[in-house]
Amino acid sequence: MANLLQFAKNLCAPLLPSQHTPTTQAYEPYILVVDDDLTIRSLLKEALSLEGYRIRTVANGSDALKILQQFPNCNLLLLDLVMPGWNGEQTLEQLRNYSPDLPAVIMTGHDKDGCLPALKQLGINGFIEKPFLISEILQITCQFLTSPPPIVQQG
Image (cartoon, rainbow, N blue to C red; front, side, top):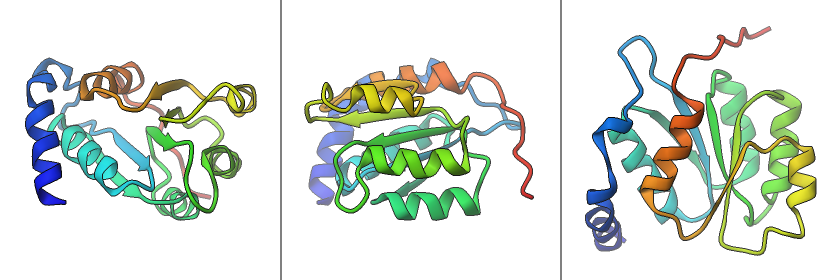
């Protein structure tokens, strides 16, 4: 596992442009990554952390809901479509009940066409096909995280 992660880091290192860092000390965006694949979670956490983002990763939808309830000021959701338990669509539906305006980007290596209409109704903001380049992830995160969003007040 460690060798695979190191290989992936080495492979992606030239794709990590420092100019993508949109953060300042006052604003450190928080991204929630939901993917059942440990390698994907680890790679995204490493790459996005290097760019100054705060990252929380979970392996399933129910844990994503728990994290979002604990830490409601999430700025972006990167969500796998095919997972055990709640799939990406079910997870997004549950998260939308709690945080309706959270930008959500779906990641998948599976056929998206059958579920795309339902995902659009749930308000997805983007779609990335696996396998993806780290530069693609950085580009889409920058689209959503260039300025601070309003703070969500817990009630």
